[in-house]
Length: 122
Image (cartoon, rainbow, N blue to C red; front, top):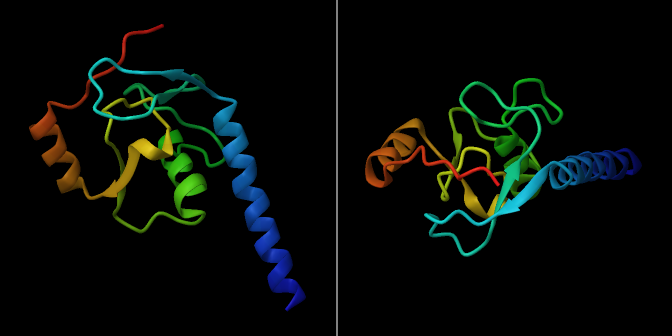
């Protein structure tokens, strides 16, 4: 019983550290094309060649995936699932703009919304 409580506390502390790291690594931006009711949290640290932020705790994990794990799931993302953006801003890590979907969902969104939009740099 005590070990289970300690494990839950460690997990909570782990995700709290990720949430704090994310909040310290963003700037707030309202994209002009967004249908979102809240601002994007633009990742300002390391990004890959495609523009997606990465490198919070797991090497190579996208910052948006880490954000979804820390703020929404507090656990692992299911196998074969992607973390998609409602705002179509690759650098956005706002958990309110993220949702789970498949590769097929991602391609559908690309076709419907003409995704891959990026905000102007401010």
